[in-house]
Image (tube, rainbow, N blue to C red):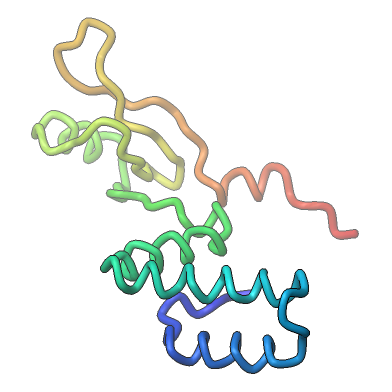
Length: 132
């Protein structure tokens, strides 16, 4: 299920208040709802709402959807030219002719090389989830 990471804080606080009205003051539910509400106030008042939105988005985003391919190349030759251009950054994921690779330092530390790193879609093809 996808959740809206651009939620309206005031609307969420209104819902928490409405739900909280159904529980007696001092109950575990009352305490949990108050803690959640105050946490939202804190995030907003300390100007951390956008940071929290990103955390919330990543928390509910499947890992497979959170992986970003920096570059896509049709051939290894194109990828090698890009690597030699000096614009590659350590750890970047690239797709070369449909396969995933990660940019890593050369063993002698004089440049970059590609390390074969299957992308999620490759792994899903090779190891499909059980259809149970």
